[in-house]
Every structure is written in C-alpha cells, then in structure tokens.
Length: 122
Length: 107
Image (cartoon, rainbow over all chains, first blue to last red; front, side):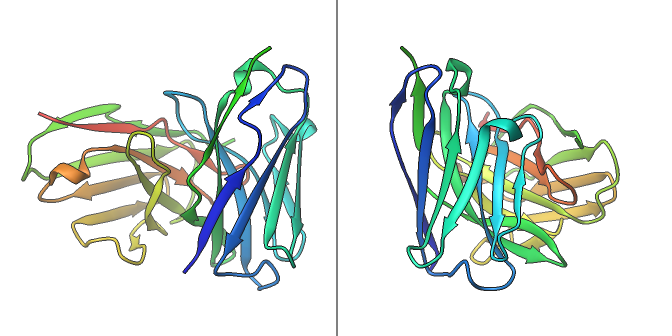
C-alpha cells in the first residue's frame, strides 16, 4: 500500500526559505520507473505542478519557479525534500507530494499525500 | 507550456444524471492525459490515466476518452459522493499542466 505524507512549517515569513519533506511508504525510489513530485494549490484555486524527481536522480522543475526550487531524495529514508527560496505571500498554498508511475515513458500521478497548508505572512 | 482548458467551469446536475466534462489541450498530447477528483479540504484523487484507463479501485461509472487535443470525462448515475471538483492534467511534456477545474454541484 502506497502512502505519502508531507511535513514542514505551516507559517513562513516573506523572503524565507521553505523546506518541505515528503515521507512515503509502500515503494522505493530506487525502483526503475518511479518518481515523486510536488504540486501546490493556492486557496480556492487550481492545481500547479512544481517539481519531480525520478529513481535515476533526474530532476524536473516548473520553468516559472525553477530558479527558486530544489528537489532532492533520500532513498534509504524514503523521503523527498522540496526547498523553495524567497517565499512570498502569493506562495501561500496547500503543498502536495505524489507518487508517479510510468506510462510508456511518460509519468502520471497515482497516489497523493494529504497535503500541508503553508501560509506566507510577516 | 501546454494550456489545458476545461469546460464547463461549473456544472449543476441531479443524483442519477450522467454528465460529461471536456478538456482541450493547446497542442497534441497523444493519450497522455489524467483526470483527478477533489473534494473540499481533501487531496486530489486519481481517477484515470492514459485518457481512458481507470486507476485501481475507481468504479466503472467513471470513463474517459479522447486523444490528441480533445478529451472527455463521463460520470454516469451520479451519486452524492461524486459532487466534487474535477481536474484534467497533461503529462505528455514538461511542465505537466492542469486544467482550471470543473466544479460539479448538486442541482
């Protein structure tokens, strides 16, 4: 059974760096074809894809946020960490991590964490 | 980036109805489209991948079709638990992009 859970601060100040951890079970990021990604959702708005890391260390980022994002994995700990620098109130959102699976070399989300609400405010 | 446009943005229907939601991509994405259901305050739930393949455990009342640029999600025999917001997402090319969502409400 695949499960994921996000953890991190609920409140950050403008200009600070956000660090979120996704802790998962039921799969390994050493398995070929597997990845973990991050998606966010501002209150009342649509989903926005942020970043993804694959079993082979390939990293992908949203072009609009690439300069601010870093995604890393700790395979033995079953964790993926997302850092976002220079936080702004517009980054207030619920942040989700999700497991991805290969579909003929294209990757889709199939399992999601419960999400964590991050508020950016002084 | 590929733009995903869903229609309608909101939809009112009654229990027992059959509804269809449309998703259009700004360029061809083959069959690499997923659908998600999201209820208020909850995480998205994966329903369909590869345009028409049901995720494990998803009831057959949900069905998807399409390829290229035009896709549909159909929900038959609506039940109270089906009223939610539905999102499409293309994963053919980076960055993967979501539609703006379709809110399905009880009439």
